Length: 41
Image 1 (cartoon, one colour):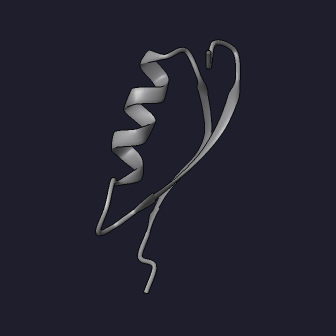
Image 2: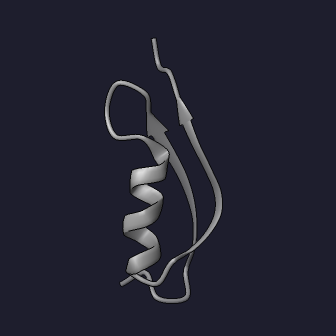
Image 3: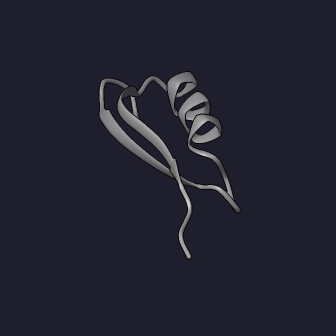
């Protein structure tokens, strides 16, 4: 599904961090162009 796709990852500090989402998408074949974990208050 993500094979060859470029992805921007925005994670949540109190939810799922960007690094965790990034690792999942990498194993699915996505190319991560930006990854960050933010705090949404």
